[in-house]
Image (tube, rainbow, N blue to C red):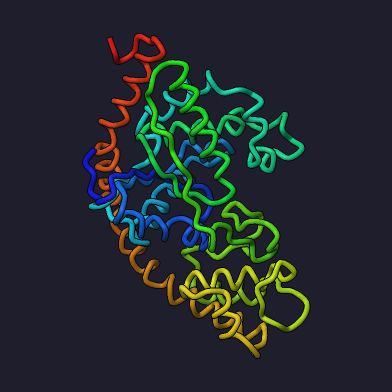
Amino acid sequence: MTNNASSGGRIFSGIQPSGLLHVGNYLGAIRQWVDLQNDYESIFCVVDLHAITVPQKPDELRENILKVAAIYLACGIDPNKSKIFVQSSRPEHSELMWILNTITSMGELSRMTQFKEKAGEKSEQVSGGLFTYPVLMAADILLYDTTVVPVGEDQKQHVELARNLAERFNKKFSETFTLPEPMIRKQTARIMGLDDPTKKMSKSAASAANYISILDEPEVIRQKIARATTDSGKEIKYSTEKPGISNLLNIYCALSDVTTEQAEQEFSGKTYSEFKSIVSDKLIEKLSPIQEKYNKLRSDDEALIKIMREGSEAVSSQAKETIKKVQKAVGLFGQSN
């Protein structure tokens, strides 16, 4: 793989093609990727293998893979600067996961916060894939000698596991893996749900009132923001005691590139209704050009698929080289013979 960026570092990140991507995905991840691709060698993946850790309808999954790929491009991920591909097109992800599974303890996986949250009281009934999800994420990262992983605060634990597994493998077998570091954007690391600002905005939420989809029409955006949970009192202020208002301020500040202090001053004396109307306007202003580009990309799915195939081919040599080194280190027959 050639490095098209100036820094010499390499980043890897991805989003599951399950549900509709929302403004939390855009502000907390994709927009950051767009900036980072100018400074790092960048690999961005549609992580479809992760998606099937919970039940998916095959036709919907295939459609969602194309949606996510088109949204990446529409938001500004440039295939001339970044490698963009679908995870399942590279079998090395699954193979490395299996090998890393053998040096991962049940205790480590049982302590993963996201598993505990998703499984809840049904931990005995969920799939083994959901339990070992973090090992696949570690394989995604380590396969490409990733140095930096841009993630939300909730994914930091998974990057730490990847780092621990890399250190463990290097010590047990041979110096094989680069140790990755998480990169977390504090301001928009966690965009919360509109209907419940104490929980993270989620594309798999039971209610569409929870999120603003990147593809939502302007009128839908206005309705969702108008109905968003707010707090007692009238002051528009960023505070832990005002999670609803704080969440909307967080969204507005990220879209407008202003500080919370500047936003508080801007909205001083305004009503909640006026505040929500301005937040809606800003969302529509930022999402409309993305939606235009998305619709254009989806008018030619063959061209979109071609970009994904080219991305997969571009990362193939690195993926194969890593697997070959890992097999040899472990003592497997594999590609090294």
